[in-house]
Amino acid sequence: MVLIYIQDIIEKNVCTEFMVGVVDAPRGARLRHVGPAAPPALLHRRSRRHALHHPQTLPELEAHWIRRSGYCLNVAIKKLSRPFQNVTHAKRAYREFKLMKLVNHKNIIGLLNAFTPQKSLEEFQDVYLVMELMDANLCQVIQMDLDHERMSYLLYQMLCGIKHLHLAGIIHRDLKPSNIVVKSDCTLKILDFGLARTAGTTFMMTPYVVTRYYRAPEVILGMGYTENVDIWSVGCIMGEMIRGGVLFPGTDHIDQWNKIIEQLGTPSAAFMARLQPTVRNYVENRPRYAGYSFERLFPDILFPSDSNEHNRLKASQARDLLSRMLVIDPERRISVDDALLHPYINVWYDEGEVNAVSTHHTAHIHLY
Image 1 (cartoon, rainbow, N blue to C red):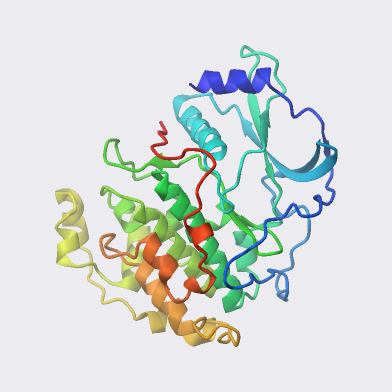
Image 2 (image 1 turned 90 degrees about the vertical axis):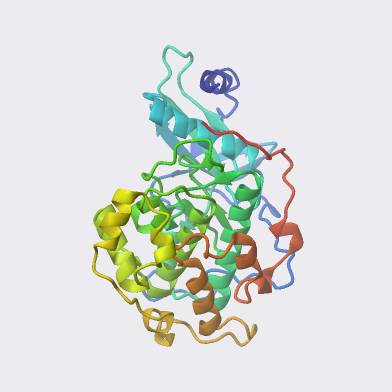
């Protein structure tokens, strides 16, 4: 299957007319929000600490433009160097190709094109992925002074994209600020699907997924996991947006677990009972922590002023949502559907966005 994809790229290498540089996208190219509330512009107010500068705000990607049907389009080109050098790299490249090609949603980055400079499979080394050029990743946006409207709207879009993946039976497994990109109009897209997997219990669950800081407790402890691992990651990202720094900066998986329970408290006996015996023995013999209230972990001083435009967008509602996402026991953690209905999020709720129908058939996508 992988060779078929690569042979197709080599034989249909149509993206030959691209140049270094950036030009304005054609009028009307940006997606318009049609929900019940108008989206905020991300750069309406700039932080004293950080300002976005177009176009070189995504250091891991190169900015280019391509000419298509008589007009120029901003694009980012990501290089996959020797992506099929071994089975692990090949699986990640295949997942990214397949998901970017098949999953079609406004909050998920799409594949505009792919090409390789090599002319045959014998010479094949590199693949270049062509995608829409965004203005920044969320790492940079977190350093801005976000008000409730912007924070809530960004979270809403994350959840819309995640729900679309979950409906297709896909767990992203590597959500983090650097894998989320935005435009200055507050449009958000999720990218990097190299670790995404099909949801279910028919494959071996590996603990080495999700960048450590955003790794859910059930992953750290080697338990089976479901789509709710992505909700934990969103909670970590939301907490980082509020604090301006990583919530659980563990140096390894053991320290990561300790950082979590020091703040959130030792989990219940019912949760412990579901652990493997050796893991349970270790966890039960650790010092017990009562944890802190979310009012203490995220005091009002960390939040912007309550919104004058939307009375539900305030610190207490944001804190409540966060407390439902950052739950150690995945069986008690809020679902993506309930998160989208939460008062802090549903001010933006639009049925067409939340339950968008893909133009491709995404049900039962199988990823190796």
